[in-house]
Structures are given as C-alpha cells and as structure tokens.
Length: 230
Ligand code: SAM
Image (cartoon, rainbow, N blue to C red):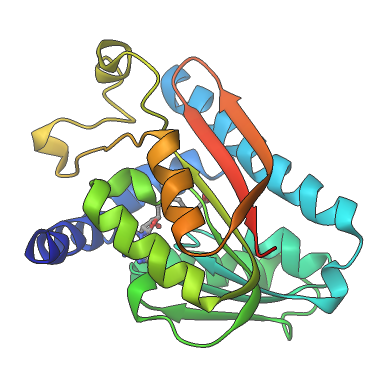
C-alpha cells in the first residue's frame, strides 16, 4: 500500500501542477465555467461555508492555530485568516500554493497570520489546535487514506475536520461525472470512502465525532466530519 501511495502521490502532484491546476483553479475561481463545473463550484463553496460556520460559532478563531492540509487555492485558508485565526496552509502542488498566495495578497489587508508551504501532508510537522483537510482524500484509496488520517491526527491537539466523497452513492451516478471523476486521459482517479471506515480510523486515533455535515449538489458530494479529542 505504501508503494502505491508513492505512485498515487506522484500522479496527484503532477496532475495538480498541470491540467488539474487549470481545471480546479477555474472551478474554485469566479470566471465563466460550464454547467457541471459551476455545480461543483457551488457545492465546494457550501462545504467551505459549513466549516467556516462551525468555527465562527465556536467564537475562538482569533485564539487558535489551524493547519489547512491540501489547501488548494486557499478557499478555506484565506477566509479563516481573515477571521483572525493563525493559519498554516500547505499543498503538495506548488502551482496551487502559488495561486493561493496570489489570492491572499489580493484579498487580505494583512497576511501576517497566514503562511504557505509546498508540502505533502504526510511530511507536515508541528502541533495545531485544529487540522483541516477538505476534499483531498478523494485522491487516495482506503489504506492510504488511513495512513494520512493517522498522520493528520498526530498534528491535531484538539480537533480534526475532514471531508470526503462518501461511498453511499451509486458509482454509476458518479461515473457520469467526467469533470469530478476524470477518466484515464485526465490522469487522476477518484476514490470514495465509507463513512464507517473513516469514523473507525478517527476513533482509533483517539478522536470522537462532534458535528457532521453533508454537501450534495448534482455533481458534487462531500461528507464533512468534525472529530475532537475528548
Ligand atoms: N482543500 C482545498 C479546498 O477544499 O478548496 C483543495 C481541494 S482539491 C480537490 C485537492 C487538493 O489536495 C489539491 O490542491 C492537491 O494538490 C492537494 N493534495 C493532494 N494530495 C496531497 C497531499 N498528499 N498532500 C498535500 N496536498 C495534497
């Protein structure tokens, strides 16, 4: 499984530095996109908004450190930094990180509490109050996801928030979705995960589920779990 992870990672990294970068920068941006991409854009924004609402509701954003692992173009990191959190954003793709940095410079008045790094999430070190990893596990099969969650759990002092494509939907529906589940020519695969498997992994790492969310649009599905240390 570990050797496969190395291969999966190399493929994912290459994808998000090339065609995947162009595709996802558009989806996560504001310009014109096609209908499917627009649906995914809306769904993804709902996932981001759910997490921001949870953290805002706790009322302690300005006091906590957040590790956003696989930050993409900064869709979550930038608003969290804007809300006063100390944010450590990282991504395996230098193109994604570059775009996130440019966006942060353009949007934020002050970027002192936001730092960026090009890093595989399994190479991250340090301790953070909250570790968040949204829509990244979809790129990895079950055994690899378990290792990754284990590593992220070791960085989290009190909370870990994950989102993933749940395995409860018929693969046939999802397979139709060329944009979200690209075929071989688009170079990455998409993996769905069973919620019970993910919960088991979180519990094995000493976390308990607190809040849960689910984003479903026509072409985008993301289960969101907040796990806390009791
Ligand atoms: N979390 C962001 C969001 O929700 O806006 C981005 C989601 S995007 C679908 C997946 C991101 O995960 C890409 O930017 C990709 O480069 C990153 N990624 C994939 N594997 C990774 C790894 N092993 N370590 C860090 N980032 C990774």
